Image 1 (cartoon, rainbow, N blue to C red):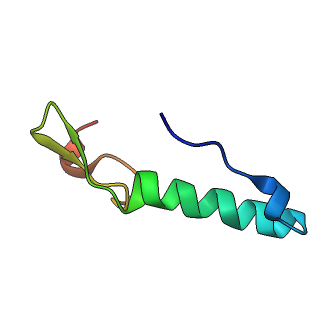
Image 2 (image 1 turned 90 degrees about the vertical axis):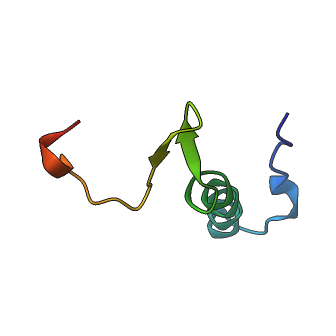
Length: 54
């Protein structure tokens, strides 16, 4: 289970957003994601349908 973010250490809303973004980036950008241990999902892939596939 993931720990809850502790916003009590933040002095302002900007610090809260930065703290939340750090966790998001670690979980969804920096960590490779595979479906069924085969298909790699690239979070940095440009929007749209590459090769006309969804």
